[in-house]
Amino acid sequence: MGKMETQVLKVDPYEPELDKIKLAASILRNGGLVAFPTETVYGLGANLLDKKAVERIYKVKGRPKDKKLSIHIADVADVEKYAAEIPHDAYKLIHRFWPGPLTIILEAKDGGTVGFRFPRNQVAYAFLKEAGVPVVAPSANISGEAPPKTASEVLKDLDGLIDAILDGGKTALGIESTVVDLSKEIVQVVREGTITPSAIKKAVETKIVLFVCTGNTCRSVMASYLLREKLKNSEDVEVLSAGVSGIPNVGASAAVMDVMKAKGFDVSGHTSRRLTDDLIKIADVILVMEELHKERIIKRVPDASDKTFLLKEFAGVDIAKDPDGPNIPDPIGRSLEFNEEVFNKIKILIDAIEKKI
Image (cartoon, rainbow, N blue to C red):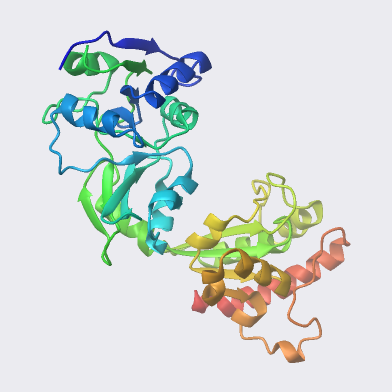
């Protein structure tokens, strides 16, 4: 294989220069091989859609042809483009460890399996996002050699054999990602990195409870803090909250903050979150405040119908006899006293569901 000049593009590891990122992405889109840093080791990127570029990776590395290449992504939604099915456990691992040093293997749409990696390194993220194509990226070294942690280590093996290197300094971890195979019924760790098998097991086995209201500033805040307090000694439940509408990244309402403070809860650190399909998919149990919330969730993710419940329904309330009907009234913009009444109603329901979680 003929030698070429390998272009080294030195970039700021925290705020990579856009012109250099664009140049590297252009090289990759046009069939070039570009090494780039992740938080684990340097990867060697090629455009998955360019057969010749992918073949070059195997030749340059001396990599066995039967050793598959993982797709590196900058958006979780890209997984759905290539995976035939994404099991619930995969969503849990994505929630817990991405972006990060974890490769997830799933069934591929075109048969067989495919691995996915969402690195948290800023240079990698900017490069993958700018590339605009699926990027395969094994470690940037000759097969059998130690994975490179710096651009100079990449050059030692591959100088003159690849087109460019994004030099973002030394990688943070220095060992390859943990690889987990979820293409079969049993979750299997096939390569251990910084994420241990016990951490994978814990993430999969942790039950995720999601409370949903309208804006995630009132009712779901009360419910989530109450349940977290009830389960504070439990390590196998994670409690989340979200709103079907409203403004993301705002705090709890002033009235809720006052009520919760009077009850011994500090909710000053809460920031509202808009409900997403990913949140719906990772949850084991979804508890909503109104029938409308339940309808919206099932419309978005029909498979969530068997795990989405009205909070009153889940608590075993005879809704037909409840004066408020199936819904918990929305206290937004109402008096402090009304907010306290809603808190008391939710507390009774949380007390009732504690043993069901």
